Image (cartoon, rainbow, N blue to C red; front, side, top):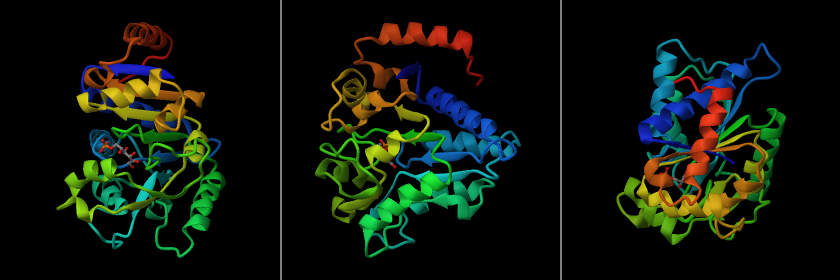
Length: 267
Ligand code: F6R
């Protein structure tokens, strides 16, 4: 794991935008294949999405030819519900950039056979050439996507129940916790681990424990994000607050300054 510690959430978003831009530039249609991004919802990537929109508007970045696959979608919300993840992505990113709407995918939650539908989602990702960069956030309980504690570390995209904790955390987007769906379809941990690169962002004091367990704890389904320790190319991008409980902070900082001498990050 490459652990990058930045001063604050704004800086985290800027560095994340550098990684996203790099993947898009490296995989332009004229090259080997179209860029494929895995995207996340939630509060953490909002600043990143704002920067990507600014870069597009400034003519610095184009999403033409880019395909996206989102991590998850709630089950049971009407398609046009304000809090559906499709709606979230339209409002916070897709409506403001030049991406082809037909190239933006979220797990389908309307099929009567969601198991089959999940497997089809993984297949569609494969057919697109696989995900070049998977963006991730982390839940307070260590979840990635909606892979809650106890999720198989080899899981495919599938139907998954949300924990009470996650429903309580996400109730800030709804009028009450009762309105938060109990089910989702989420990319599995096995699906996520197939991405060529993972980029997990975490900011704020509330993420300290989950971040520490993910990076320095044992690999365990108790902390689903710890499965990223098994991924050969994961970048964990943190602000000071989220990194505060890491035991080996000094090492991560030393290692990152050496890394940047070899591969500078231009922001
Ligand atoms: C979102 C997702 C979730 C969030 C996580 C953190 O698509 O899959 O795993 O990344 O719950 O959410 P925030 O960023 O709101 O703290």
